[in-house]
Length: 411
Image 1 (cartoon, rainbow, N blue to C red):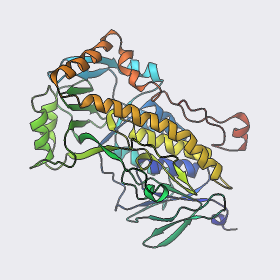
Image 2: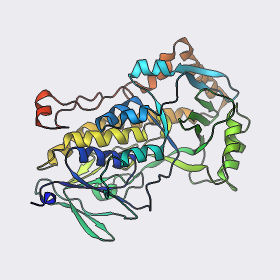
Image 3: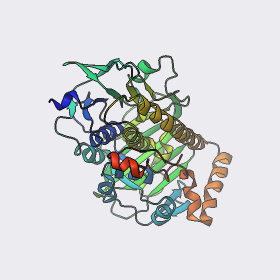
Image 4: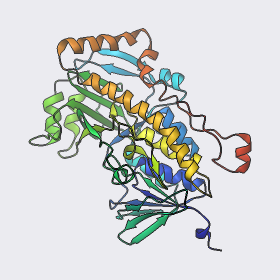
């Protein structure tokens, strides 16, 4: 008997962090998976990502958590600073681990993509192959979904729209829903060689601007910045020069990191978020995850982390056979409230960054400095986020097979 006639088939549109996590998790549940990627390779457009305890626990479900923990670099102190170098709030790796039960690990996105892709069978990912949803399918009636590719149509028992903030799948499922809106901020990202002198990981907050510096295991540094700016504006010369204009007089090692970037290496993107949540993340046999479902401001660093959660929770609720309808409804029920809360929390922090007047910035610095009374106070913004745990299986579910069961994730 041809196993493909009995094994359910999922088609994932997009090979980013969320799409690959879902693909790995579904493969482990017994699904046959095809991942369609428009780009010619899996090398992501991006720089670094901070994987928080919630994402590490989700990655444990697919056997990738310890691979990431091995890349941890943050061992000592860190915190929030002012542009002149003053520490506004201090915390430590130990305090974060004690509060949330796991590490915070900054990694290059390409490293994470490689770790996820290595857990898929050869031929699962088709690069240079765009996919267009032409029929979302119907779970109740059994009609399969259809994705059209340059090589023909792909019928699927399940389609996963993991095609990012500019998702083409989202308006097919929810026509007329508001598109992501501009958050008033633009961001820059770059990975550069580490400076000669050691430094503590930090975020530095100024008037309408922010800089973050995180060391990576491979000896490089992931640096990111954000600033208030009109939507769509770009540097008249290049973005490294723009960073110099904005941040060259900030404390060390910021100027040296800017100088270490090559011309054209700095990535810039405007921040858009979906402040009006979707009513659900699925329709028929098609669903959304990651930035396609809940784009958010990056101020809490949770965009990729929430996409990883999405993929693991989805696979948890989908059976390895039969109608996926109930599982998709359970996925929406679990993920819409969870991600809506994180989107709103990220938007609140983004609004703090838009303060540009001296009195408002002084008040913000005073509030931040209160955390000097204890490192735990600086971590409270992540309560209810970083302490999330993936769904757990019951004893009877474990007897039935991997991944079945009921969700006990913290909201």
